[in-house]
Amino acid sequence: MIDEKLFKLSPEGLSLIDRKKALDSYIGHVDCQSKHFLGYQNVQTLNYEEDIKGFLNFHINNIGDPFVSGNYTPNSKAIERAVLDYYAKLWNAKTPHDFKNPESYWGYALTMGSTEGNLYGIWNARDYLAGKRLLIDNGNEYKTRKHRTKYIHALPVEGNPNAYTPVAFFSEDTHYSIIKAMRVLQVPTFYDIGKKFYSGQNPLNSTGEWTKEFFEVPSLNGNGGPGAIDVEKLTILVEFFASKGYPILLCCNYGTTFKGAYDDVKLIGEKLMPIFEKYGLVNRGVIYDEEGHSDVRNGYWIHVDGALGASYMPFLEMAYKQGKIDSCGPIFDFRLPFVNSIVTSGHKWIGTPWPCGIFMTKVKYQLVPPDAPEYIGSPDTTFAGSRNGLSPVLIWDFLAQNSYETLINRAVRCENLADYAEEQLKIIQEYHPEIDLFVERTPLALTVRFRKPNDKIVYKHSLSCETLLINDEERHYAHIFTMDSVTKEVIDEFISELKQPDAFDTGEKPAKGLKGVLQKAVFLSERGRGWR
Ligand SMILES: *Cc1c(COP(=O)(O)O)cnc(C)c1O
Image (tube, rainbow, N blue to C red; front, side, top):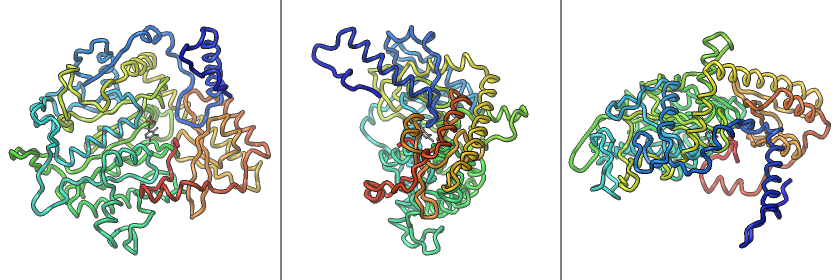
């Protein structure tokens, strides 16, 4: 436990001794908590100190576009580009990045985690679908000075008032950052539009009503299921809105936060492409400015939120091809021509001391940035202004030290450890015959979920908890992630704690309070998401 008094700042600052004492106590806390850490998809045993300490006394900032160095020269953009190239190859995008080649990849290293990548991806998707001006239409010219503060987008289409109103689809297991992005960017979901304009016409409900089960796209078998999106239901919903002339914005999950499920992106594309064809959403003509300039682009966008899975599954796929494991997840990357953007976090599978990540798309989908600030000498094509220049150095350092071979073995080891944890947790059930421990694991997930244990255990292992609504019953779950820093010994210790008679509080009341209020206020389910 931390003594907060140690950290109180005063106008005089702290003496060297007091400062040292305070810092040491905090490091002691972090060190202790990280040793038993099981609850989130982060790695706790990092080894960057030696390589990175030399950078810590500089301000390294990658402000602006990664491919244009700009006037802020203490940057790490050359290293960032090496990292981006690595991911472009890993995700089968067209390399190298070339701003004159519309098919080639473009991306950047995030300053936040996947939250920023989701925000950026959905922003890009919204404006692409709303018919804003593309970079390739601008002769790859970033300068829009004459348009500064002017938000140019497509003119209304005769006969289809919905042509430039993107509608968002995502499953009930989606991470809260997607919900937040939709709100920030004011992208309506299919529920918002359905409820407002198509009352009594919900194609998934026999009554036609847009009830709370349709806040989001249902997952397979709902809250009690494995956590992947129900592709059949998604297809029906998408067809309904495509037939009304709306462009479609779909966010897929690749490794959901709580259950670790992989949406079948390949199957989704196979089901949706014929619908997109049928309703004129493939290669549609868009008149994007008042002068009548036009281009041809798609009326759909498929974004893949691969915060954990997009970093990790490529190696599991390689392991599968080498016969080291029996199966791997569905294809999600740029081998699928209908994938528009992918995001992953650096601090999850790889492990970095702070949040970071990668966003990737293709040159042909890039928009002209809102402004062209001469000040930074580099196009303002990213979300943040100042960007963390140390993050790409860390990711680079990791990738330079770990071959594909090492990472394949690491993926297999983590997968085997999840198998082991699942098996052990199922044995625990015998120690508590009177209560159902709900031990479940989605195939290939690095996480196992089970009944939430007592608060002491939750704190010791930093367990994240989640309430799932299964057949109208609120069940309190926790989960563990078998990331690279987790050892069999930590799992064994955890399992022995769970064998104790008082390990699980029973008869607890469902959390009341804000729940009902929030649900009403945001019209969105807050079930099925971790990190709260
Ligand atoms: C963790 C996570 C995010 C957000 O990542 P941050 O790094 O917390 O911004 C987004 N999507 C999924 C599926 C996640 O698991």
